[in-house]
Length: 166
Image (tube, rainbow, N blue to C red):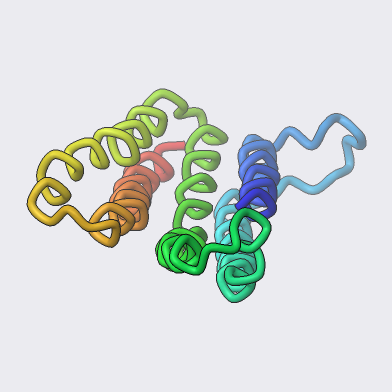
């Protein structure tokens, strides 16, 4: 998943920089950008790019998996994982852009804590509760998009709370 990740990082950096309105001191005549538009465009780009590239990687999964193995059973497991991660990876990109936006408007610690709790702690809790009850790979893999979604919702609520104050 390297290409979507790299594109996501570029958009996060751009969102954070342009929300701060620091246009690299290239030209004092550059227009001041509307932070809401920067956020909306960044979310739109990361959604489209993540969904398209994630789908392409998933569709190419049988061929990409053959770089690592020719065992059909292993390829079956790889495709199962790709179904959960590749097709829904755009959610992770949305989460990253929201973190970048909050950093851009001056809040860095809170989104870091939310990300750690939402992505790391929630998955650990998931492993000791849900996965402990149903020990299947599907039960484990679904924790990725669920943790991303919970984190996105929390970050959106934080933006709604903090952004009017900026």
